[in-house]
Length: 156
View: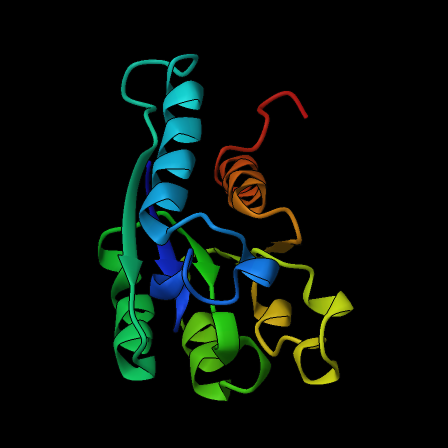
């Protein structure tokens, strides 16, 4: 199962940007933590059912749109932190709505407890789930959600 972990604008600045809000963990360290969680999951999954995470970050809306539009060619799902685009990018929202690839929205912080302009995400209604406020754990919960969505219990 190939999953894209997609990060939007300014997340490349993690560890340096507003550490009192976002913490001191860098994007590379965040990606390693998420990859480590996937490795833990893979240790209990059968052969051929491994989770293969790919990581990508861009500050450019058009590149993010292209990446989402091209996702059906290479990914079974996307874990996406739209960052500042969450609150206004109808173009990114429409890209998610236009593809069959399931997307789970994530945020490091709890956007509902932040500034008024950050409290609403235009992405939420086209995503299969949203996880926020738990740092890297939000991404791990999003991965669990995506796996459950892509591999529903046969006996359920």
